[in-house]
Image (cartoon, rainbow, N blue to C red; front, side, top):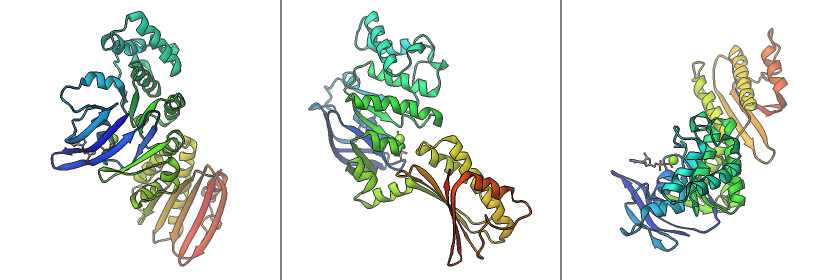
Amino acid sequence: MIRVEKLSKVFGNVTVLKEINVEIHKGEIISIIGPSGTGKSTFLRCLNLLEQPTSGKIFIDEIDILDKNTNVPKLRQKMGMVFQSFNLFNHLTVLENLTIGQTKLLKRAKAEAESRGHELLKLVGLSEKAENYADELSGGQKQRVAIARCLSMDPEIILFDEPTSALDPTMVSEVLAVIRRLAKEGMTMAIVTHEMDFARDVSNRVFYMDEGIIYEDGSPQQIFHSPQKEKTRAFINRIRSLNYSIRNTNFDFYAMNGEIEHFCEKHVLPKKVVNNIKLIFEELIIIHNAVYNEVSIDVTVSYSEKNEAVELLFTYKGKNLNLLELKMDDDIGQNIIKNLCQSITYSFDAESNKLFITLK
Ligand code: ADP
Ligand code: MG
């Protein structure tokens, strides 16, 4: 369906895409993952010519889209795009957002466009919002309308650029559910996403982008469980766990919590879990600093996809002491932690104290 040959994109003196070669077939659901700044958005934007490639060729159904005779608006209809920010018309109703493209670009009659609009609202679960203005909707609802609007143009492929990144974590799943449904119905899609569980479940092919190329292209099984190349492996391992080092009492507490929140969002962990992790570390750090003068703490949060469990590791250097079994005048902190944990294992080795914790 899409064939890309030696696609390059240069901004000023920065080469963002370096001679990418790839084919996308009808019915494929491709997740595109990778560190930020590696050209994932640029790649999608080049595919539908929102960005003019510097060199290379792109064929869609064997038509060379960079040929100057190609009808670009027509091409864009074949390729819907859903952005992080929904780009709805806020002064129009939800239904009008879905009919405007159909009547203006596809020249459909109003009644036909409205009937299709209602069908699509049903598909994304928003029938009752047809007459609401777009700005009356929540972020998750707006994004579902944006997907319906994209579908209203009868695209052959949909390109999603981080469709859930701008959403409150509570709204991520409703949008992913709609994308899953499209996947079931056989829609061809390329999805840039940080939602790794989703990428693994929904797609049948994963691109890991790095160094300006599709650095590794494989099945979800390969990319997530046995990546062949070094950078893919490093990336996949990094997203499975978060490490944070604390070396003095004035460390940036907010930065650590921010990283924990971001990590938990990526794994779609409930808010309560996020709060419990932050609370456990906060209490442990308070107890630690009451006992030790030197601060050398490393915290790790891991999410075991297999057990669907969060595991915490709290490592601190110094004399052999289990912070949770210490006799203290005020044992509230210790009790708070014990109440939130499923299991706590303490070990000491080579000046390192380790508390391995699984959450309830
Ligand atoms: P990703 O989506 O993987 O985070 P992007 O495709 O957005 O990455 O960006 C890749 C690189 O290209 C970044 O270094 C970014 O700063 C640069 N870039 C993207 N768009 C432009 C632009 N319009 N002008 C200049 N540089 C850009
Ligand atoms: Mg991007």
